[in-house]
Image 1 (cartoon, rainbow, N blue to C red):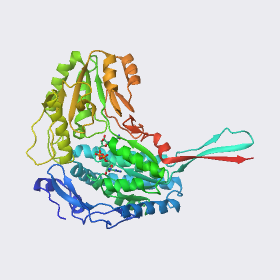
Image 2 (image 1 turned 180 degrees about the vertical axis):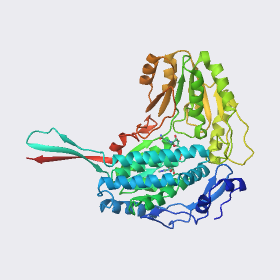
Image 3 (image 1 turned 30 degrees about the vertical axis):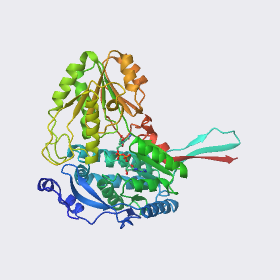
Image 4 (image 1 turned 45 degrees about the horizontal axis):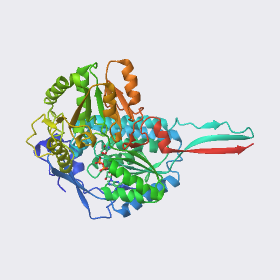
Amino acid sequence: MTAQLTPEVRGLLSSTVLSWLDKPPLGPFIDGSWRTARSDTLIDVIDPGTGLPVTAYAASSAEDVTDAVAAARRAFDDGRWSELDPEVREQTLRHLADLLEKDAEVVAQLEALDTGKPLAEARLDIEEAVAVLRYYAGWATKVEGSVIPAPRRFVATGTREAIGVCAAITPWNYPLPILMYKLAPALAFGNTFVAKPSEQTVLSTAYLAQLCAMAGIPDGVVNVLPGAGATGAALTAIQGIDKIAFTGSTRTGQAVMRAAAGTLTKVSLELGGKSPQLVFADADLDAAIDGVMGGIWTNAGQVCVAGSRLIIDRRVHDEFVAELISRTRRLSLGHGLAPATSLGPLVSAVQRDRVAAFVDQAAAEGANVETTSELPDEEGFFVAPTVVTGARPGQRIEQEEVFGPVLTVLPFDDEGEALRLANGSAYGLASSVWTTNASRVHRVSRALRAGTVWVNTYGVFHPTLPFGGVKASGFGRELGSAAVDHYTELKTTVIDL
Ligand code: NAD
């Protein structure tokens, strides 16, 4: 198809990106090459900044899923990747990281066009993906086993082995970093891989597939299945996969877990959140305002760890909220590729309408809704950053994941109430506490029920820092050494002397 790009957007894209968009529709990437999908379903790739289709791809059918899993199985079983010397896998992954870094601007433009996020944020995503890949490339040669103190007539060892075929199902908010949290450790330890990106954002995953081939990763080791929920459901129901790593909504995570029970496939689930930011009156309030803003306006609030509940000391509530709104008004809403943009559109019209419905309901239930900015003239899926005060604890806007630029503010009178509000959520992904009181730092971070607590900062991610949730935010930890458990099996060998 010919991309329906506005002249402004066309002028902001590199010639490589334009030629990539004008290719025939992408299909599945199986056994090292692009296939024609065995389905007639074409899915448009929409530019969220204009609402226009910019290319299309063919959704992978159940037969394509079978082929991709069979290709990954063959590639694992014949040892073309798992039985390479670890340093060869390390060098190959480093080569892939170099290729991705070399094409970083192309991939960042594709990502900004596909997700709607500001180009500056997309560039950080690609940097993060490269860093995660390099970090796990190093792990290929660092995982060691152990000698286990069994009775003396035996020698017993514990060794780490690849699991087999790993599948990843990923969401649309951080397509490449979230894929890399799974792909990089899986490949480092010798597994083979099948990726199912979100139907909303296939471009960067597809681009990476071709870089994998260029880096010398053998055919069949990395396979990609563009497609929607039906493709994901087929992937979770099929025999032949040893592990499914899922990131997405809690509801879909539950469906994945149910399906995986049928084949007894291991799962790890990175799910939704409703993360609290606790601000005490003794905090550096200036820094806290910037931290709270970064925590909720980044990627227009479409962040699993969005700090979407500000829980604030009543004594500083009014001045803090007023200053936060005033600084938020300085953000510039616009197309993700436009250089002046600091806040982009949401990924789709459906998501925009969903967020609007949350806000309308909160207003109808008596909360105060403050919209901070005018919407741009363009036809994109824009939502102005919105601050909701006066909501009741337990109200829908305070409990459910909105996944948009909406901050709900709740005042507290003492530390106990702050903690009750913070932990009064089905979710437990991330949290933060802003205070200069050292004892409070320890008390509150110990009491918060969340996979991550940030203190006087927000949203710090790094390849070495394990990340994941508790309660309805899922289980399992990605990143850091925690991924060794996810992508290897422990084998016990007992030798009778
Ligand atoms: P989603 O659950 O709608 O979709 C996620 C993925 O699952 C997509 O690839 C989708 O096609 C696929 N899918 C849909 N139905 C399926 C099924 N029945 N079986 C298998 N796969 C299926 O989520 P989304 O809207 O793409 O992303 C937003 C959600 O992701 C939010 O809830 C957000 O909090 C969560 N998220 C969590 C993290 C984390 O690390 N915890 C990170 C990013 C996003």
